[in-house]
Every structure is written in structure tokens, then in C-alpha cells.
Length: 148
Image 1 (cartoon, rainbow, N blue to C red):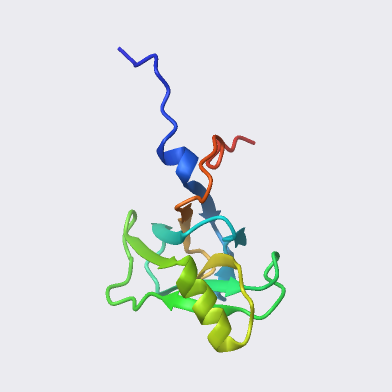
Image 2 (cartoon, rainbow, N blue to C red):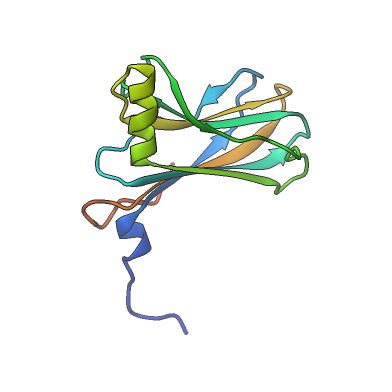
């Protein structure tokens, strides 16, 4: 029997969002720009759904909320074994302080982040998770259902 109580611990302290990654290109694609102002940590994951080719995966930051400024690489994945099977996953994480430090070293006041992914062929696909953690103010709805 399902519980009648509701829980709001993980989803009230973290903001998670999944993205369908079907770029139709081989150039690096910024997944979605998120504001880090009220969060302490950021993590991203790439899960392969179609394809076997080479992958690049990084967390980038920018001063502009739409990524139109200069991108600063915060951390990149040294892909040793390619995620070449359905369900293979790559993970990255960084702190808000690492984001600020990378921006300062590059001469930019960055606060927006995105995962950046490239694949080998235009038919490769995957799913990307972006996760902002350590909300400075817990609140219901940081992670919400997305239904079209």
C-alpha cells in the first residue's frame, strides 16, 4: 500500500531537470542555462540512448543567462571509455565556488551554468540530467513535473 504522507526533502533542496539530447549535429551543444545564484553545487550526467561514437562532456559557465557571453569551462570529463552502449553514463560535478573561480581566472563574472555535450554523428542521441544542489532556501517546486 502506498504511503499517504508526502515527502519534500530531496526535491525541495535540489533542482533537477532532464533534457532529451538529439542535437542532429556533431558540434558541442549547450544543454540549458541555469542560474547558480541560490545553489551550492552543480552536477550533470549524460546517458547514451543511440549511437556509439566519440563524446565530449563538460560543465561550462557564462555571465549571460542565455549563454550569449563568453563560455568558461569549469570541468570537463576525460572520457577514457566511450559511452558506446545504450544506458552508458558519464557524470560530472562542481561547486559554486569552482564556477566562480573558473570565471575569475578567465576574467568573467559567471553565474550561469550548462552541461555541454558533443557526439560523433548527427544521429547519436542521449538524455542529459542537470542538477543544482544545496539550495540556500529549501522550497517546494524546485524540481517540478514537466508534461507537454
